[in-house]
Length: 142
Image (cartoon, rainbow, N blue to C red; front, top):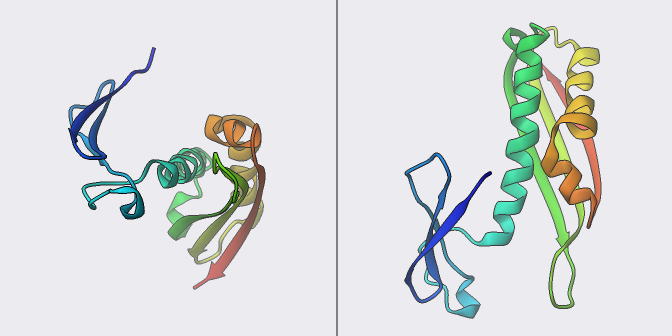
């Protein structure tokens, strides 16, 4: 079982600890609600989780398919739309995968992405329960 523990630092600031990791992740509320820039805001961290989950899947799959050496740069960008009414949440999310390199195997890289988004990334699955999630893949040949 995974566990997260929050330790209040004052105001809206907390340190978050996850099971198996001793380093804290600083959290804070938005300035307009009294946050003071101590740490990260909770909602954008959801997008970080999505990017991190799928990015790690893709990197692992690239290595297994032996195409990671051809990729010199790989980024995952997540854009999200938040509802206006409370409670505000992300209702539309778009993930952009960008691969840069020489002689990129577009077919295998596309397979890495589709396997992550359809089978391996649990965060993708969670997001799909409350948001419309789309993605695109970009290739930049050096």
